[in-house]
Image 1 (cartoon, helix red, strand yellow):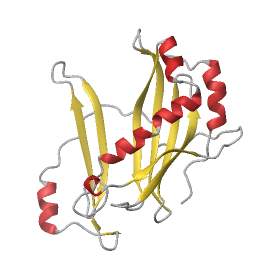
Image 2 (image 1 turned 120 degrees about the vertical axis):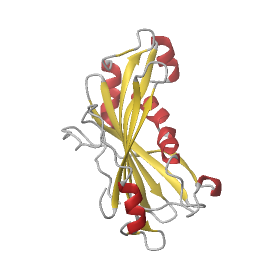
Image 3 (image 1 turned 120 degrees about the horizontal axis):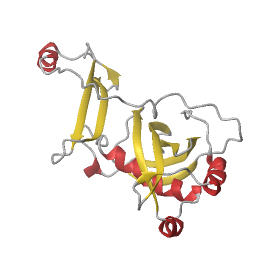
Image 4 (image 1 turned 90 degrees about the vertical axis):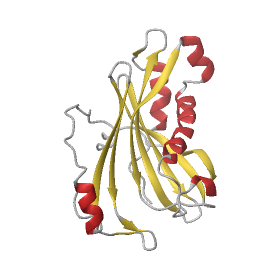
Length: 219
């Protein structure tokens, strides 16, 4: 931690096997809710947090979501609306802004649309025993969004690998026209029966090529 920032690490561990299931890395800054400007931590709070600092584990983190998006030489499409809604008061904290953990749910709302547009429809997936999994999220918060604000999630693909694909969501506060957050997500296809990652089929890859968008989005 430093004067105005704290880095947090949380790990989900399988209690029966001891195996690491997921990690969450959070980079937080103190801010003034009235001005939305960064402010330093009070000395007393900083002392308490400093006493809690622990050594980071040596478990490696693969360089995927959040890294610069590879250059795309083909045509670029416009992002499409994959979800829309209104922020409810019960989704917000004491400051009137949407609670951080709910961003994951909003980002998940658009994943079904991406799968469908790639050609991984429900019927096709069931017939071929295909599954899709999100492996890594990189969420960045840009502007506040609170109770009563209407929003849209605008999505598209960022990159296609052999077995993985990367997609992005732009979370817009349509009440203010501000970009509230961005989601950079790495996903993969896998065989449900074998429980292993699979190469993206040619027909899915061909359809997905038409969904590539420019990234990062412009506010």
